[in-house]
Length: 446
Ligand code: AMP
Image (cartoon, rainbow, N blue to C red; front, side, top):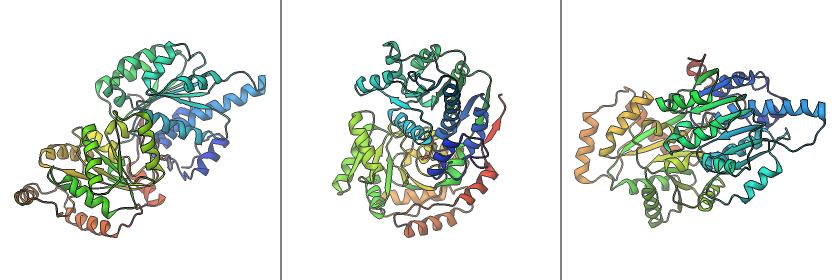
């Protein structure tokens, strides 16, 4: 399947080609035809699957065709009015989506703007007043500017609610309900969430009409694209192991996850003591500091970024080859989100996790969710004496279910030795084969 076969308008096709997208990802292959038909969509998928293009391309396609028709009848002119709205939980994601839509729509003449909290509203208001076709917004600022009368949904035809589960986790449920209540009834609605607990299902029903569902299973991201490994290490020795791993890969872009903001700051300090420059991004950092750290990381000026889960949403760095889970998350889906930062779309990546003895149950939950054993990494040097026997016992007590683990371990060992700063890119053909075998499924509304 190619983008051309999907029947996308030529200017968008050209932009996608220039971007180097050879073929649609599974979610794009499933979602784009549904959206081109004008149906509502429930997408169960996470960031990293190519979700932005899956909704962005068809929306731009519709807007571009509508613009052409209007120009034919009425000529150009008149102020642009908001015709599509994307609501997403974090500033980073909003910016990321804005950048992607700008790329996909660069030959269409359509204009988008991004609005989010934590900064003065002046520039955002000016952009709105000048007129835009697509608005990308975080819920709080959106509601705020709506209440101030700067936003009208009179001409709105398309609405996307992105990362709905994350929005609920962040306490946006009331804002979201208020926003939904203000939407015009005649619209095409899209709802994306990585998980579908009951309150998310309820929320999706408020937004969607007659919809089709596309599910891209998390295993696709983990099992097929990201190579994983886990180190058993005590809490005390985690910083030492981290320093060691970073030094081994001094040229790579490494994203380190910390469960807490305080923990993220502590890691930055520990790394500084070892002369490793790193920056942390989390909710307590100012927007300017977050954007500077992210910018430096994307430009390759900073090799190591420490992030909490929420702040990391939307981080999209092309050369990101390694994710390290300094702490294992207690919610297994979060692990899938995290490792989805590497191995974006068709690229492959590596995710290494540190697991101390209190985190063993988290590891078990993760392995249950991804339906595979995370390969155990070889013994490392940062083991306390009394801990050593514990590690050995643990390994013996709980043999990985996967009979290939020893092989994996050796493979990992060799791989790590051979790695010298480049990510292991696996060609498109290989990926296509995987996709055919285990592709996302598209079902009729349930
Ligand atoms: P997303 O899930 O939208 O955040 O996309 C993840 C990454 O995949 C981004 O870096 C996109 O530029 C990239 N991407 C999206 N679609 C494709 C595609 N069809 N081929 C290659 N890369 C893609």
